[in-house]
Amino acid sequence: MDEIKLTQYSHGAGCGCKIAPAVLDTILHSAIKYDADKNLLVGNDTRDDAAVYDLGDGNAIISTTDFFMPIVDDPYDFGRIASANAISDVYAMGGKPILAIAILGWPINKIDASIAQKVLEGSRAICAEAGITLAGGHSIDSPEPIFGLAVNGIVPIANLKKNSTAELGCKLFLTKALGVGILTTAQKKGILQPAQEQIAKESMVKLNKFGETLGKLTWVRALTDVTGFGLLGHLTEMCEGSHLSAEINYELVPQIPGLKDYLMQNSIPGGTGRNWASYGNKISIHPASTILPQANELAPELAILADPQTSGGLLIAVDAAHESEMIALLKANGFPDECCIAFGSLTASKNDHTISVL
Image (cartoon, rainbow, N blue to C red; front, side, top):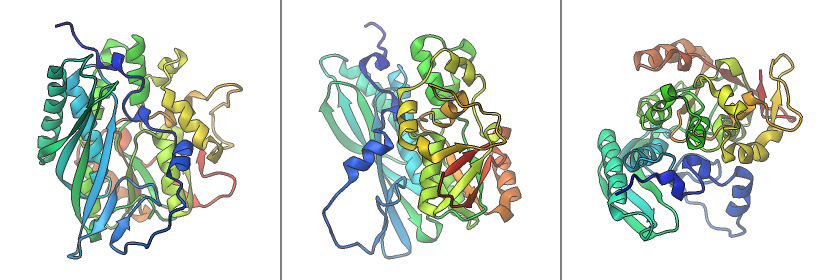
């Protein structure tokens, strides 16, 4: 059998498949009124990572789902990446995953079922690493390959983290470097440097288990993961949910080396433009910044900050008084140096912009 390249069978890739935030607002609009459920601790109103429901015994159930089309050619790796990405939503709420079921769409007449089996095997490997069982699922015959998980988790309500509870002065940290979307696009174009071929995959298969640890820390004020809307998009959601703004230092944002070289070769995911069209009006360049606005295209620095991430890192808002403790904890857990420094802080809400980029 000839080697299958899964990315050739899909029009999108990974979390870059996400519908743009502005379009999603239209889809989610509803005129239907219903009684509020007092046990629903987190719903759709703050665009958080998962729904959370109070079980009445001091604990809550976390429920989430995530699926997408292939971002890599290897089916086993596709299964691992899609699963790590879905499970991440539980960690981003400060919780512990307990169960997963699979979501599979497969073009049966185009790609042999044995390839889909490898996708499921990759998923089982990541589920096992997370300490959970892939307990079932649902499959359909679809025009393009699609895979993901529906995941349940549990969290003591006292440990629950949201994206909408950040406070003025909080310091911002990110646990994975940006640039996965740019690298995977470069790979599709055949321009990715051999030395960087494994960087994106290794980042995407890494579980965000650290989120469960963060859930136990009262001085971690807000938490989310950075995926398809890019750092700027998910930080915008955190700011708006918390009624704050943010100032970030571009030079301190963790990012994979060499990204600008690929941007110069037009290695820009489609999701980047959709992201910027949705929230670019909420972003300003600080007067002291060295970022130069471009007349007809997005400045490279902003393209990196809007780059859609698949299975991206945790965006953490930390009480400023505990910044040194956060740095020490990140180092103790083996995070690279660039992730062990605050790249920004939350400020009072500003009317003319949500995020200022220095």
